Length: 272
Ligand code: NAD
Image (tube, rainbow, N blue to C red; front, side, top):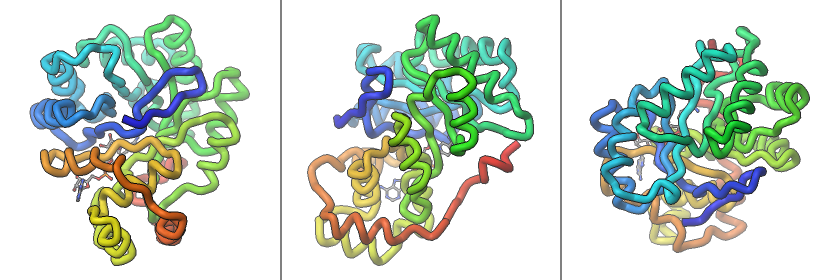
């Protein structure tokens, strides 16, 4: 498995398994399948209501804890300092873990204006060695600058919507300048439409791969961390089998050319 080294030296698999919209029981089965297939990183969140299923699959896998990389996220109504500490404990308990690899603030919720307080609480958890790395999700440059200036601590990761139709070039450049890893959510554009794009089909045919594999390969070659989701065993395996081929500069440029400001999810400035 290819890895990235975060800004505090912690090593994270570049490809992991996402479980948004997967009910608890199904999340258990999907994570068990993914771990058997060779995934070692799992991305969940309090809001996915499946931390227990994910935790059961982890416990049953018998994989040594230090070979796994588990991420979960703080929800939007828990930005107060004390609520952060409680939410963290609850997530750990549900996951059945005694530390977390990565804890993220799920959304900045600027209208609430408490994300800087939440970030200071994450820094406390990090300093207490309860979590190996801390980061954020759906943060804009404005949000990132604010927490860095306020706390002096640069997030290890910003997990944002990112796929060929919404490639976040400006934010990726800001991340690179500040030592923040870019993690792509909905890396396959949720499958809808994007994977039927003829430009992707052409590149996929040329490499004897699927459009999903080409999109994941594009992310990896850009340096993004990716967390594709599937509950279908064949696709779970397919999405991991992306290390044995290389896209050319022309392929990458063609995929870069699909950018169309095509956001699928909420605008972080408007999310409550
Ligand atoms: P995704 O881009 O991973 O797409 C998943 C969908 O694509 C699947 O449901 C399936 O329909 C299809 N698909 C998957 N593999 C395929 C294949 N090989 N061939 C054809 N179709 C395939 O979408 P996602 O689930 O939205 O994002 C991935 C993960 O990102 C989530 O599970 C979650 O962990 C994370 N996420 C985070 C946030 C956030 O706010 N931080 C938001 C959304 C998602």
